[in-house]
Image 1 (cartoon, rainbow, N blue to C red):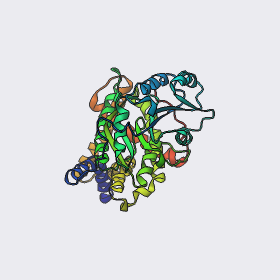
Image 2: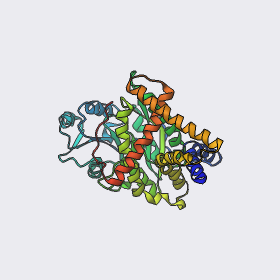
Image 3: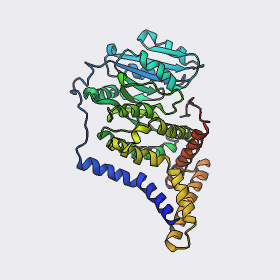
Length: 385
């Protein structure tokens, strides 16, 4: 019991705290990979044609704003193609998109809804340009975001480039503060991994790939923005992070609403573990190390947390273990109080942090069982913002 307790505790501490320190050491003492970018005056736009593909399902509330955002980007019109892949939308999404046909916006109208993965499988091959930029309907690009993404393809081994997502929250939206705090932590890891050319996955709202490197993904793929970049990494190409390619998204209105999205992502995480298992091979070097440390251990953290509490309960006879056990109970107690306060619209940051952390791990665990049971639908539903 002692060994199992310490093993669980050490692995939790490692994935959340020690791995970031290890990344800092690796990037400090080893020369990082930095992509050869095109000169600032061109950013590659004199070379690359770009096709922006936006997956949409019943996005009538935001699709017009998204199209206008794409049309206003600082990029030559003759080298830009905008495709809206409508996956069985039955609201006004298609009608709104057709209203921009005179501006060259292409509607890929898929009558039967089959999920985002299949929509991408069918749409990416029909794009006319060599660089594909994938985005979501509720994501807004900064005016120069496309240039900043594309300039990284000056390096022939750069196969995927991920932009930086900034989450915006409305004044009354306290979830955004918690999500923003956690996201800053994730961005810190992404930047360090990206400097090694081994970024794990991408931000679904803003990332670019070379069309020739795209391979059809299973139609039941849940988190395509992880699997697609990982498959490119598997081919030996680099997946890099571009912090100057900025995009914006609003956070969910509440942790409860965010929970449903995280359960879906949790199920997709475990599915992705199967789809990208080749990258777990230690012979892959840093990519495998980062995958195990940042993703695999994090995805199994809910079970490690439960294990630490469970095994600790059997050894509370010793003073040290009793103290650690009480600290764990106190932690979950504060998370529960945080939930009660949140549902009563009372927001205390410290309690909210405990609640957010625990709810995130509960979502992962629920996602695991949904994956094992095969009950997680590939169809996505917009999270209310």
